[in-house]
Image 1 (cartoon, rainbow, N blue to C red):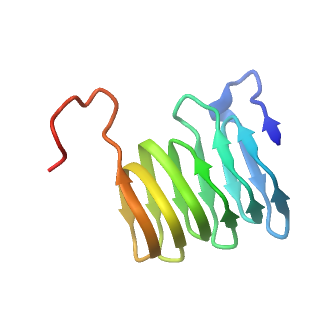
Image 2 (cartoon, rainbow, N blue to C red):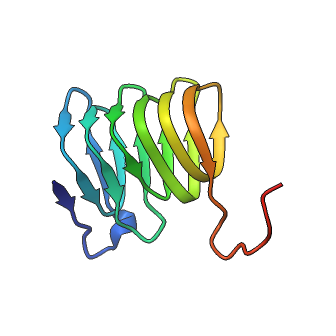
Length: 130
């Protein structure tokens, strides 16, 4: 398990990258944002105040769960994308299978084979979703 910690400038200023050709096996808890252009086998969790972002680039592959306030997928994912209270964006080059938890979802022609679960924004005490 890996933990990357932010600098004095705060977690929003920290951006970590797993470059093309690199692979990571295990679980990572990261402050700030993460760009995945390589391969991940394991779970990724952002530890932030809601401003962090996980981006899986077209060359990126994740087999495992991603938990972050904002998730963008241009590559391949298999597992849970958990952006409860945040946004998931799936682009035309994305291939996504598994489960997606989101408050806002944007799909732009992605190959999508997933169970979708909409999570209401915090403080939304209204009745059922229409």
